[in-house]
Length: 284
Figure (spheres, rainbow, N blue to C red):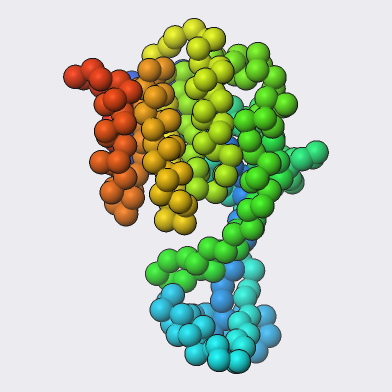
């Protein structure tokens, strides 16, 4: 495939050599398990007239001041202006990026049931997707210095190991996993059944499929709202995946504190001096 100079420079800035890109495109990637519809909105600080004649909040702190002035029996009313509606969720966004690179991607997650949500139709077709539940919904209040994201995620309760087996069967799930050279399981925080899925695959599927030098990538997302005991349990399970592939745990700077929590169970699960598992940093 002939790349434009702009695309080639982008790949180079990401550290993707032509050889690495060729290898990635030759690898089938299985991605899961979430799915969200993202609505981007602009919170209005002052309305000056109809349509676009308004002043948005300049920052999250300015917005927080308006919220903080309420309470004590006083309400606050804030107008929001819709800007964009798009597919969202860590899994679909990751898979969409891999598709853009030209990778062979299969997706399993929450894209709509019994019919795929209209925003995900093209994506589901491109990834031969298996949908287990309806997507969640995120309303993202956009400011110049960041976003405040309000999520409705009850539909993620339906993303479980049982629903995965109901959709594919254990034999079918085994086939999907076996044909993938790379696995990317993301957004543990938003999917309550995520740990159960990992445990089911580890205990029931991996022992029955052929060993392979596969890459297994995990990204837990923002773990701050989850119980620390659940987090430790999940990290212990993730560490055991190192028996079946090269495990990578993706963290940004704020979640870097998870690294020591993961390193110890990883060494217990795979006590080789040169462990194939590693830490992947994505620094903002």
